[in-house]
Length: 160
Image 1 (cartoon, rainbow, N blue to C red):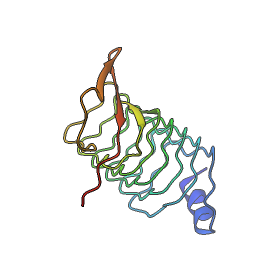
Image 2: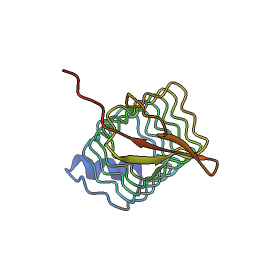
Image 3: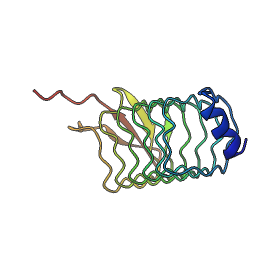
Image 4: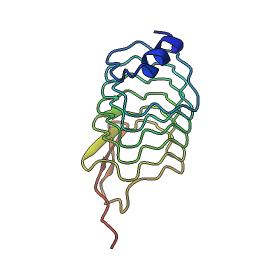
């Protein structure tokens, strides 16, 4: 599906794009929240500045994607593949990251605050410079696993 076809379907009110093939698609600074892109092929997509909040991206392939300044807050990223993706300054607040793969991803200054309790993500050789994680991080949450890192995110205590 081309970017034009995708946008026509979206503007016509369609929100269900399960398994759609959008590899290499280029979209910039658009509001596309609430989409179902589960199992979608978004390899190498450029979605810089796109609002994909409240989206279902479970099992989607976003490897090598450019998601700089992309808003993914409140999204389901279960088993999504973000390997070698650029998520610089991305908003991943309150996401479900269960078994999401961020191997070799660049998460510089990404916001992971409030990620769903118990979510796990594989961060093998990911760049986490300046990334914001839930606080406090308990000892043992960041643990080496066969040359990789798995992180289990816990719920933040509520401030009073």
